Length: 372
Image (tube, rainbow, N blue to C red; front, side, top):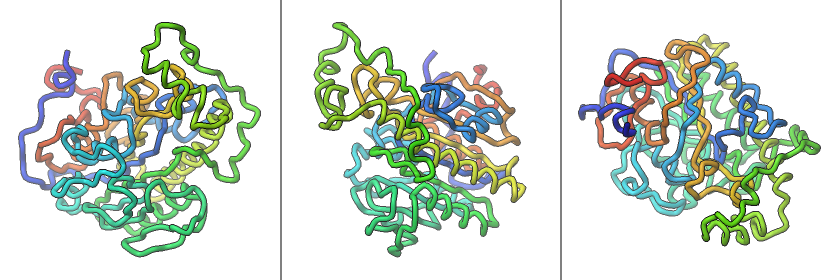
């Protein structure tokens, strides 16, 4: 069975517009969050993510979610366009988005949604200028900084100081924007975390200092490794000379896990807000990583490869009106499917032209083209 057969045929082209059922949507993206770095999956037994665990328990866990290019900028562009990297041509962090590229939030805007982008953009070099498709814009240059820095933030085209820890501050901006929404809304909350070098919030520093890290079994694979993998061991992206310095992989992962605690807390704040505003049942919240990250698997660190640790990401969907709790989606889905499923959930016609397919019916356990 091909992936195209599984996901269903592409929708016939149609003009952008609102179908009968609008829906509020919050899309939360994290950086370098690997698929098993969630407490309920216990990639490392000490790691705790109670809000992510609750989201999976009460919603949908897409346990075979992958990105089509395991690198930040191409992956993010694929989410926004529904296209593979060779089509949208954002092949690295410096390549500008080609003129005329259409992001799905532009279609939501045309249908009447209020839209906001808050966080890491990371496409088109160091520019943090507002991009098409968003009424509200809060971003920063390049990778940004975990703690306050002279670069500050770009808030709707104006330079503003960064006041505190970046995960907390982005969440503050997101909640402030949500408080004033009346129309159907789309919020894209794009965290810097958990990008290296990992810097947790002060309140979480040292939380896992004494936690036992279990090295992956494939870290010391024998003679059957491909030649390029063996060569990578003694490089920036290998365990023998990681980041060209004396880096302790276990300590590296512990800081990663401590940094992730701030993201988990941020998710809890967003969910609490939805409960308070009586939007919890009707709002679709999607949580996803832009690519994975290796911590010694195959003798590698970082991403950029087609190994599972690099390409496979967490993906959770929560909306009690749409999904039964505790749903586990076993079919493979990808970042190119983000735009189609969010457009369908919002009730906005997909004009086509992308490579992805909506998997809304699959996540709901309904048949599509005779397939589950």
